[in-house]
Image (tube, rainbow, N blue to C red; front, side, top):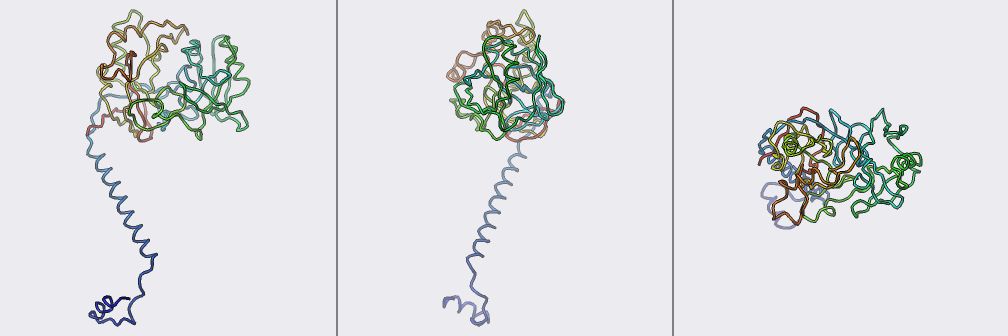
Length: 341
């Protein structure tokens, strides 16, 4: 102990020989950990306080929830879903966790094979059952053997893995589509998804997706479809646009203005508007691609602002992409809240 320390304690009437032992470095470490915990607690409290300060404004109600297990095949309507970072989940049903590929690994969608939209999916326990016109049903296990081959797949110029679903599934899709040889692969949770930072050239939230085009969630309002149908000769159904969440009780295209949402216990953040392509011209009831409508009508009034042309180019906008900021559960009938600062 230094002389100054002995003098100070001596003034308190404590002889140096009876003073407590000098603090050990371990005590300092405990103190540092305590201070760090306090600091982290303060940050968490400030974040929670900031979240509480945001006003919740109800903008609509969830009318439909859709999961599309196999990319470009029919969706499955569910009344409740878990919203994971990779999209909606209901039991063994995962959103776009299955993908048809060519033998070289390149993706196949209804853009190239429109009849994929005729493949319907149901689920029983841990099995997926696929049906298509003129085909016997195909039964897929929810979990594949780890001995099945891993494929290097290619989606929109980006690499991603997929586990082969076996020869029976490959023969089924090959026989149904009748154009060339195909395989079916499944994404698994431990695999690395495609990064949003590589999908988009502009600044977007940081997240990963499996086989969806761009984001884990796409939201569209009933009112926007009603508005579009007033401009079309042939009225379209919602499944032509493949949203994850359909909202009712708002004005047409009001969803364009929703930056952050709370639905059930799920928090979402807007990524970008959804640019539409020729996939929307595939009739989900016939599997025939028109290549014109509704794209031409959408282009007449749903093009982006000129300042955003480098992002969307000439694609019309219909629906909104969201990332999942806080996972949780949601149900048909849940209020949709806009989180207002």
